[in-house]
Length: 255
Image (cartoon, rainbow, N blue to C red; front, top):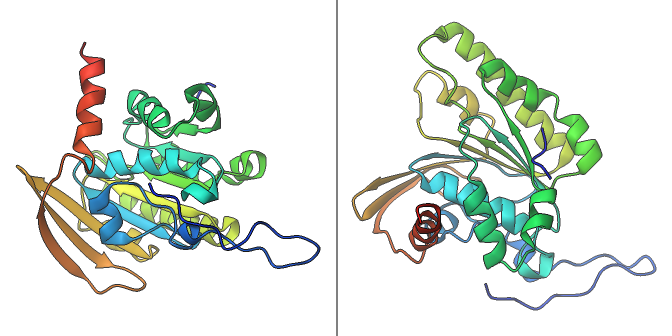
């Protein structure tokens, strides 16, 4: 159910007039970025044909909400000038982080919330249904970004492996159909990479990456990308990339 209600580069041209071809901004050619340097340097921008899977640490969740906020920005600021549809499989959409990010990007938070679409799933079958039945949401609200958050979190020990594979196969096929039909950027996140499920989903993704944290270091692995070779990097986490924002939000929450 819907939630209750950088540096600017020059444009090549403005719009399309009298049959002239429409041009886009230099930033929009790069795709939608999260503003998290570690994520953006690893996978690049999300484009209309991108289906990206990011697994691992909570960085995936920070990036997901930043993508949602930045999708609302105008193209001249690297956005999509549209809403995002966030299907929450892990019940971890952070409203405080979202509104704080809206403020940082100079968006009125009430309007930002009105544009943000949020649906929560509590079983694997609800998750599958929300994805399969999303055509109505796209027809009515025309979101420019789809996020499926923590896609494997509901697949607990009570779900038999054969059934889990069947449901994930349906989810993966539906995501591919949405990508082809709607031509929107799609981001999928997960804390884990279950060996018996990840290949089923990864087959339908154009990008697959994992980010893990150990103290002040982050290990980033790129498994699949349309224009990059698989790579693994280790780097020190800089608070300016994402941690400082998160710490400030937590400070507000606790006091």
